[in-house]
Length: 177
Length: 259
Image (tube, rainbow over the protein chains, first blue to last red):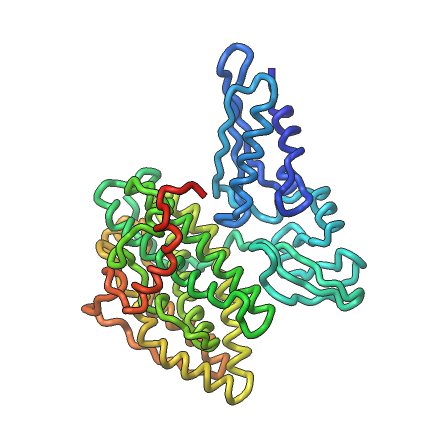
């Protein structure tokens, strides 16, 4: 009988199409649900969180999930659902995911609200003497930084705010009935 | 609410189309700078901003499409010009005048940020969840355009004059962003589009003025006249028809093609 762990292990083999990191380490996988479809088989539903809205890699990831999971013995059907709740954030990236991105030359903001706005250290030489070149980069989720010490440009993932955006001192919210 | 009461459907579709059409058209206008922006960083930035806006538009069209039984592609590409509800400001060609491009984004991004912020608190759950993500992305646009305004305002006499004249030229058009779509009061009353305090125009002008002053630029904005009818009712500039013609050209060749 196929288990959640079997599915999760399969998902670990699927990399993000643009970076050497599995979708599990990237924190995209929110939930795996199994429903028996017959005594020995399961219908599988995988809930994933898009990084940026309308990210073009998402349909490719969804297809890969369907392809890989449906190849498992005992899987009748695979449904992939994407949801914005909870919102994906860089904080969901695992330590091993961070390390493999660093080796690739991409840094990830440190987890936790207290680290918001902290500059990264250079992924190549570890120097803290770095500056932001651009708030934008080669894909929508990355920015361009530059290391003054080893003179390498590198990429840093954008951290999107998850709270406190519009001071909803939009004070008097109307009653919703 | 997860399911929308029937009487709110049409007003919400109009509101969603106005938001998505603004983003869709602005995204196309900004994409004109790919390969042509004055510095490399801005070339990358404007390309990325365009991708953001068009991606946001698709996501919002998808919600609207679900309500009217259509598809995002059909809403984006297969409507008649007078069925688009974007504001005139986003339609305008910037004629590769960098100051116009920056100032247009200044007005639009601040407006969009407030609009999405309101929608993020919508009582209609699927919309609130999406808008909560969009407003976080839009925040990056606002920070970026504010930085550009300050740099160019504090640049030299020429850059300041160019920015000032772009602001002066666009300001009368910019208030068209605030033209209400039909039935918006109903959406506000039901919390689908929660009201904001202070009201939208005051809040928006306050945000804009704050940045303009820090950039040594002056900003004069007149509150929109209630009887002014424009983009939100499908009335568009001459530039719009040719823009739409251009950007739907490939779609019209084979509307049913699967990409």
